[in-house]
Image 1: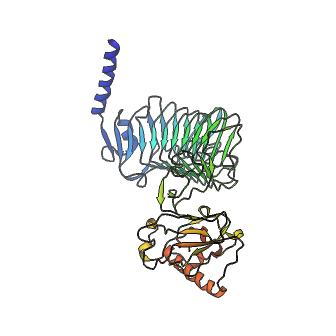
Image 2 (image 1 turned 30 degrees about the vertical axis):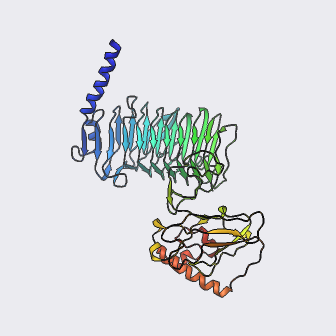
Image 3 (image 1 turned 45 degrees about the vertical axis):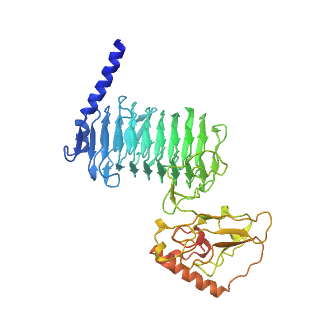
Length: 487
């Protein structure tokens, strides 16, 4: 009976605390964020208006919500190279404590000794430690540094605690170990983040993420373009007692060292991760340290132009895994643009000419042989003014068929957009002719090709708002990052 009464008392106390929760505004009620944090109690909300706030914040043992009014683009906390931008600590902090909607920048970390080694700075952007388990979500951590010597966690350093780090952009941070994020003796959930352009200093490990001890979950993150001077450009995990789980992450275009490095008795469970185009090769670590649970692939994720969302034909989308594995979404972002015509989707051993007749370009240029065939993807689209907005480009449906017959004969079709597909003005045909490699094809005179190419370059330059010299790359038209009509 006494236990039941005690439980009822706890519930009532929590309910009453919720009713008494206050909203403290900055700069309305308090002139600085730190003043509001000092004045706040458990379950209160500190709500910060847009602006640049030059502060080094400390949050100790309070379960409150720290949020912005206008989002991270307009609400910037600048650490002014004077330490960690935000330090969170205390074992009383639970998932009821939420940090959301800020940009944290200009941090240099907190100087202290870790594992008996003096560190110039740890946690340039955020330093979370001593049992604190908050939720850190929807923030931008950019251009923070964990200072030398031996800095740890340029963007975030987590030490002996388990925050949930979700839906953040961790970009262009630097440290000796863990340019973007360092997890030490942690069981954190790191979910849905874009981790890009982070670097380690010379001899450093883990350009994107460094894991030392602990068993964190690393899931549905997009790790792109991170750089490690030594090992683990995307992720480095090591030491006995290090048992992270990596599931459904995109690991693309990371630089200078092996993208994944697992060593020194670490045991890493991996599933449904996708690698592509990492500078030193797309190679999975040794089975001595990696337990492959299935679904790991090497494949082009097919990013949308100028973004990390995915074309609707991406193998990283649910139901489109090339092996049929039930992986769900791989990476942090879902579809963001229409279907793409990819060489990989066509029958093998062919020369792609062009839609014939092509309503948008009557002079096909892609009569290339097998050795010169590009591997990148491109979307067919008309050049009319109704279709000039890249965000709204619908894909033109088209078919590829092997004119020479044989085992590769067949067709591949892609979905249509309502405005720019067949039926649009001048759209006479949607058939792409494909011949087997080695089959002779009729080529245009050189002078005619040059005239057509000059016309195309001028149109692309006009669409992109740049000079023609910037787009005059005739042998890499399919790889261009500028808007183009692939035809």
